[in-house]
Image (cartoon, rainbow, N blue to C red; front, side):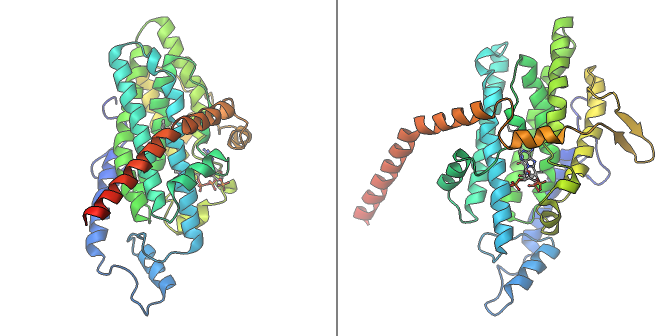
Length: 354
Ligand code: FAQ
């Protein structure tokens, strides 16, 4: 199982979730090759053109006409995703200076840096929809845009770094692989790269937990405790249950989302059970069992009232995360000013030379 840690679904030619990413990448190229027209003709009904592109599984590109609500939905989702990557650096960043060896420190540093990179690809994808990165950051800092609930939980021990890699990155990939087939081209393309990197992150977390789970009794207990604390918050990452999901139906009709929140949550549970067995750790759900009829595991739902409280700002670390982000933004003001002054100077020199 380790080294081949995603259960391969039948429709993935390369096997597993990474195989699905490869297939989505090939489909993106194919869609681009098939697209004979670079947008609606001047006299064409733009709404019909938009519907045609979606129905044909082609990509909507930044200069195409799109319904205002489609644009707003994408900005909301991509921004929330970008903010999550940036705020998501904090829980693991907490352990960079305390990693148990130089090798672990170097790996964790690289991982956290990757998350910053993901945030940047995603801000860039959102900017293609006509909003600036400054505005997006402002919306986050004002509390008008969200980030994922999961990053409001504390990292109490080194094993939490393993649990985040295995469960949080694992849930993130299950959620994000279908986004590689999202109807909006820039988001789909960003997701391909993000998913390839996330899959490496998932493995590094799994390897940390595997090492701890096969170490001393105290190390194994620490790994089990981390899994016990991260399991339900990871299940909650997929969002409210389908009946309460306000955006799913429309987002699925527009092919932004390809599966519902509950479908992806189930897929994640089914993937984790075998992996936990290999680790020798237990998932903290006494009702977890195989259902032959459904060909899936029955499991206990996360506490959705808790999810709503965390989303509204009342999780264990919401205030700390936002205070840290605001301080980092203020402390970085001089870097932004210096970069803007340098760019202005270069532009002026270029204009003089021209
Ligand atoms: N946390 O109608 P739905 C990562 C909100 S990246 C906070 O079902 P939708 C990498 C939702 O926005 C993790 N809010 O919404 C990493 C909506 O609010 P609104 C982030 C949540 O959009 C690893 C309302 O509830 N990933 O982990 C959450 O159709 C390690 C109703 O919900 C993404 O953002 C939540 N968990 O489906 C980094 C992936 N769930 O605006 C560092 C892209 C729901 O109406 C270290 N996003 N809400 O007031 C998505 O796939 C979707 O946006 C969902 C939610 C599935 C999250």
